[in-house]
Image (cartoon, rainbow, N blue to C red; front, side, top):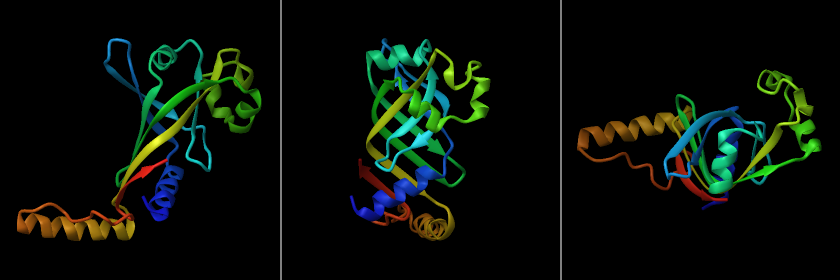
Length: 164
């Protein structure tokens, strides 16, 4: 994909502070749960904090392929990649937000606190906000009247698939 699409995806990722993390259970069923986004690296790596004894850890140890989905009223992002558990007190210190003490009573030194690193492999986004939203509405109106689908393919301001 184009550099514009890469930039747009990273711009949209910066807009979100929460996501749904999707893992696969050992029986093959998918499971989603909300997670606070702890950090985003320049290369698109997402960071989350979790407890080392949570169910998601067993699921990730069985199958490290995950999806991270983010949504607001007009912006949507999906990242598919691989998750890894990381024990790194310096990275925890860098990412720590005191509000997270609600989930980690021991604070940033909680012995059960671990980092969950999601290295994205592919990403996809839809942005129907601002000028992109106006263009989408025009295309949607034309599609409705003509009995076709909105023509937004190739417009990286609205939608694109990105290899990470």
